[in-house]
Length: 114
Length: 115
Image (tube, rainbow over all chains, first blue to last red; front, top):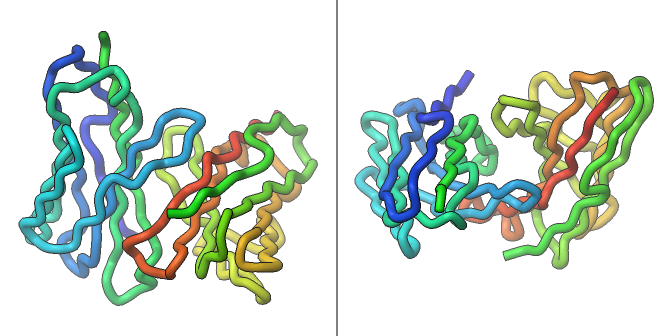
Protein backbone atom coordinates (compact mmCIF):
# COMPACT_ATOMS: atom_id res chain seq x y z
CA UNK A 1 0.00 0.00 0.00
CA UNK A 2 1.41 3.38 -1.03
CA UNK A 3 0.93 6.25 1.38
CA UNK A 4 1.10 9.81 0.19
CA UNK A 5 0.91 12.25 3.08
CA UNK A 6 0.21 15.94 2.79
CA UNK A 7 0.63 18.52 5.51
CA UNK A 8 -0.84 20.60 6.83
CA UNK A 9 -4.38 19.38 6.26
CA UNK A 10 -5.61 22.98 6.12
CA UNK A 11 -4.10 26.41 6.25
CA UNK A 12 -5.42 29.95 6.65
CA UNK A 13 -3.21 32.86 5.56
CA UNK A 14 -3.65 36.56 4.96
CA UNK A 15 -3.49 38.08 1.52
CA UNK A 16 0.12 38.84 0.69
CA UNK A 17 1.58 36.11 2.91
CA UNK A 18 3.83 33.51 1.40
CA UNK A 19 3.15 29.92 2.31
CA UNK A 20 4.28 26.38 1.65
CA UNK A 21 3.08 22.85 2.18
CA UNK A 22 4.53 19.38 2.01
CA UNK A 23 3.89 16.15 0.17
CA UNK A 24 5.64 12.99 1.45
CA UNK A 25 5.79 9.80 -0.55
CA UNK A 26 7.69 6.49 -0.60
CA UNK A 27 11.23 7.19 -1.86
CA UNK A 28 11.66 3.73 -3.37
CA UNK A 29 10.37 3.02 -6.88
CA UNK A 30 9.71 6.68 -7.59
CA UNK A 31 8.56 7.51 -11.12
CA UNK A 32 6.81 10.90 -11.05
CA UNK A 33 4.94 13.37 -8.86
CA UNK A 34 2.00 15.54 -9.88
CA UNK A 35 0.67 18.66 -8.17
CA UNK A 36 -2.93 19.71 -8.78
CA UNK A 37 -4.98 22.69 -7.68
CA UNK A 38 -8.67 21.94 -7.05
CA UNK A 39 -11.29 24.60 -6.52
CA UNK A 40 -14.74 23.57 -5.36
CA UNK A 41 -17.09 22.58 -8.21
CA UNK A 42 -14.29 22.86 -10.77
CA UNK A 43 -11.92 20.39 -12.39
CA UNK A 44 -8.60 19.73 -10.67
CA UNK A 45 -6.04 21.80 -12.55
CA UNK A 46 -2.61 20.34 -13.26
CA UNK A 47 0.18 22.53 -11.87
CA UNK A 48 3.38 20.52 -12.19
CA UNK A 49 4.71 17.11 -13.14
CA UNK A 50 8.09 16.40 -11.58
CA UNK A 51 10.35 13.47 -12.27
CA UNK A 52 13.98 14.28 -11.39
CA UNK A 53 15.56 14.60 -7.96
CA UNK A 54 16.29 18.28 -7.37
CA UNK A 55 13.67 19.40 -9.90
CA UNK A 56 12.35 22.88 -9.29
CA UNK A 57 9.40 24.16 -11.30
CA UNK A 58 7.68 27.53 -11.32
CA UNK A 59 4.37 28.84 -12.62
CA UNK A 60 3.76 32.47 -11.79
CA UNK A 61 3.78 32.84 -8.00
CA UNK A 62 3.68 29.09 -7.44
CA UNK A 63 6.76 26.89 -7.38
CA UNK A 64 7.59 23.35 -6.35
CA UNK A 65 10.68 21.37 -5.45
CA UNK A 66 11.31 17.64 -5.43
CA UNK A 67 13.56 15.40 -3.32
CA UNK A 68 13.17 11.81 -4.47
CA UNK A 69 15.90 10.45 -2.19
CA UNK A 70 14.11 11.48 0.98
CA UNK A 71 10.61 11.30 -0.50
CA UNK A 72 9.16 14.78 -0.30
CA UNK A 73 8.04 17.71 -2.41
CA UNK A 74 7.30 21.27 -1.32
CA UNK A 75 4.80 23.60 -2.95
CA UNK A 76 5.38 27.33 -2.39
CA UNK A 77 3.00 30.20 -3.02
CA UNK A 78 4.50 33.66 -2.94
CA UNK A 79 2.28 36.61 -2.05
CA UNK A 80 -0.94 34.62 -1.65
CA UNK A 81 -4.11 36.03 -3.18
CA UNK A 82 -7.73 35.16 -2.37
CA UNK A 83 -8.00 33.42 -5.75
CA UNK A 84 -5.31 30.99 -4.60
CA UNK A 85 -7.84 29.53 -2.16
CA UNK A 86 -8.24 25.89 -3.15
CA UNK A 87 -7.25 22.37 -2.22
CA UNK A 88 -3.76 21.47 -3.38
CA UNK A 89 -3.27 17.79 -4.17
CA UNK A 90 -0.13 15.82 -4.83
CA UNK A 91 -0.15 12.45 -6.56
CA UNK A 92 2.60 9.89 -6.84
CA UNK A 93 3.35 7.42 -9.63
CA UNK A 94 5.38 4.32 -8.82
CA UNK A 95 7.81 2.78 -11.28
CA UNK A 96 7.36 -0.77 -12.40
CA UNK A 97 3.59 -0.49 -12.48
CA UNK A 98 1.06 1.24 -14.66
CA UNK A 99 2.67 4.58 -15.41
CA UNK A 100 -0.64 6.38 -15.45
CA UNK A 101 -1.94 5.35 -12.03
CA UNK A 102 -1.95 8.31 -9.65
CA UNK A 103 -1.95 7.72 -5.89
CA UNK A 104 -3.19 10.89 -4.24
CA UNK A 105 -2.71 12.47 -0.85
CA UNK A 106 -5.71 13.94 0.96
CA UNK A 107 -4.72 17.45 0.01
CA UNK A 108 -4.01 20.74 1.75
CA UNK A 109 -6.94 23.14 1.90
CA UNK A 110 -5.66 26.71 1.59
CA UNK A 111 -7.82 29.68 2.49
CA UNK A 112 -6.47 33.14 1.75
CA UNK A 113 -8.25 35.89 3.63
CA UNK A 114 -8.45 39.33 1.99
CA UNK B 1 -5.21 19.71 -23.02
CA UNK B 2 -8.67 18.20 -23.11
CA UNK B 3 -12.02 19.69 -22.10
CA UNK B 4 -14.07 17.23 -20.09
CA UNK B 5 -17.69 17.52 -19.07
CA UNK B 6 -19.63 15.34 -16.66
CA UNK B 7 -23.35 14.84 -16.12
CA UNK B 8 -24.95 15.19 -13.69
CA UNK B 9 -22.89 17.69 -11.71
CA UNK B 10 -24.62 16.59 -8.53
CA UNK B 11 -27.45 14.34 -7.42
CA UNK B 12 -29.21 13.15 -4.31
CA UNK B 13 -30.33 9.54 -4.51
CA UNK B 14 -32.17 7.04 -2.40
CA UNK B 15 -30.55 3.95 -0.96
CA UNK B 16 -30.85 0.92 -3.24
CA UNK B 17 -31.13 2.86 -6.49
CA UNK B 18 -28.51 3.25 -9.22
CA UNK B 19 -27.03 6.33 -10.90
CA UNK B 20 -25.20 6.57 -14.21
CA UNK B 21 -22.62 9.32 -14.61
CA UNK B 22 -21.57 10.42 -18.06
CA UNK B 23 -18.15 11.72 -19.12
CA UNK B 24 -17.70 13.47 -22.46
CA UNK B 25 -14.35 14.65 -23.86
CA UNK B 26 -13.95 17.19 -26.64
CA UNK B 27 -11.35 15.10 -28.48
CA UNK B 28 -10.36 11.48 -28.88
CA UNK B 29 -8.23 10.27 -25.98
CA UNK B 30 -6.21 7.14 -25.44
CA UNK B 31 -7.05 6.51 -21.81
CA UNK B 32 -10.02 7.33 -19.59
CA UNK B 33 -10.28 6.73 -15.86
CA UNK B 34 -12.82 6.97 -13.07
CA UNK B 35 -11.92 8.19 -9.58
CA UNK B 36 -13.88 8.84 -6.44
CA UNK B 37 -13.26 10.93 -3.35
CA UNK B 38 -15.16 9.94 -0.26
CA UNK B 39 -15.52 12.61 2.43
CA UNK B 40 -12.18 13.27 4.13
CA UNK B 41 -10.38 10.74 1.96
CA UNK B 42 -7.98 10.81 -1.00
CA UNK B 43 -8.96 10.69 -4.62
CA UNK B 44 -8.89 6.97 -5.41
CA UNK B 45 -8.78 5.26 -8.80
CA UNK B 46 -11.79 3.02 -9.39
CA UNK B 47 -10.99 1.70 -12.85
CA UNK B 48 -9.57 2.31 -16.29
CA UNK B 49 -12.27 2.50 -18.95
CA UNK B 50 -11.12 0.52 -21.98
CA UNK B 51 -12.61 1.26 -25.37
CA UNK B 52 -14.38 -1.76 -26.78
CA UNK B 53 -13.60 -4.07 -23.87
CA UNK B 54 -14.25 -4.55 -20.16
CA UNK B 55 -12.89 -1.97 -17.76
CA UNK B 56 -9.85 -2.74 -15.60
CA UNK B 57 -10.78 -2.41 -11.93
CA UNK B 58 -8.51 -1.53 -9.02
CA UNK B 59 -8.38 -3.58 -5.87
CA UNK B 60 -11.54 -3.11 -3.84
CA UNK B 61 -13.76 -2.20 -6.78
CA UNK B 62 -15.91 -4.67 -8.73
CA UNK B 63 -17.82 -4.57 -11.98
CA UNK B 64 -21.16 -5.48 -10.41
CA UNK B 65 -21.02 -2.41 -8.18
CA UNK B 66 -19.42 0.00 -10.68
CA UNK B 67 -20.21 -1.08 -14.25
CA UNK B 68 -18.38 1.07 -16.79
CA UNK B 69 -18.93 1.54 -20.49
CA UNK B 70 -16.67 3.13 -23.08
CA UNK B 71 -18.27 2.84 -26.51
CA UNK B 72 -15.80 5.19 -28.24
CA UNK B 73 -12.71 7.35 -27.69
CA UNK B 74 -14.62 10.40 -26.39
CA UNK B 75 -17.27 9.03 -24.04
CA UNK B 76 -17.61 6.84 -20.96
CA UNK B 77 -20.19 6.12 -18.28
CA UNK B 78 -19.86 4.93 -14.71
CA UNK B 79 -22.85 3.44 -12.92
CA UNK B 80 -23.00 3.32 -9.14
CA UNK B 81 -25.31 0.39 -8.44
CA UNK B 82 -27.48 -0.46 -5.47
CA UNK B 83 -26.30 2.63 -3.66
CA UNK B 84 -25.77 2.98 0.06
CA UNK B 85 -24.80 6.09 2.07
CA UNK B 86 -21.15 4.92 1.89
CA UNK B 87 -21.25 5.66 -1.85
CA UNK B 88 -21.69 9.37 -1.14
CA UNK B 89 -18.63 10.81 -2.85
CA UNK B 90 -17.36 13.02 -5.61
CA UNK B 91 -16.86 10.93 -8.76
CA UNK B 92 -14.39 12.25 -11.33
CA UNK B 93 -13.59 11.23 -14.83
CA UNK B 94 -10.05 11.80 -16.05
CA UNK B 95 -8.28 11.35 -19.37
CA UNK B 96 -4.79 10.95 -20.70
CA UNK B 97 -4.99 12.11 -24.32
CA UNK B 98 -1.72 10.53 -25.41
CA UNK B 99 -1.47 7.81 -22.79
CA UNK B 100 1.49 9.63 -21.25
CA UNK B 101 1.77 9.98 -17.48
CA UNK B 102 2.67 13.64 -18.06
CA UNK B 103 -0.85 14.42 -19.09
CA UNK B 104 -3.85 13.56 -17.00
CA UNK B 105 -6.79 15.93 -17.04
CA UNK B 106 -9.87 15.80 -14.88
CA UNK B 107 -13.53 16.56 -15.29
CA UNK B 108 -15.40 18.79 -12.83
CA UNK B 109 -16.82 15.84 -10.92
CA UNK B 110 -20.23 14.55 -9.90
CA UNK B 111 -21.14 15.13 -6.28
CA UNK B 112 -23.35 12.25 -5.15
CA UNK B 113 -25.28 12.10 -1.89
CA UNK B 114 -27.07 8.87 -0.98
CA UNK B 115 -29.78 9.07 1.67
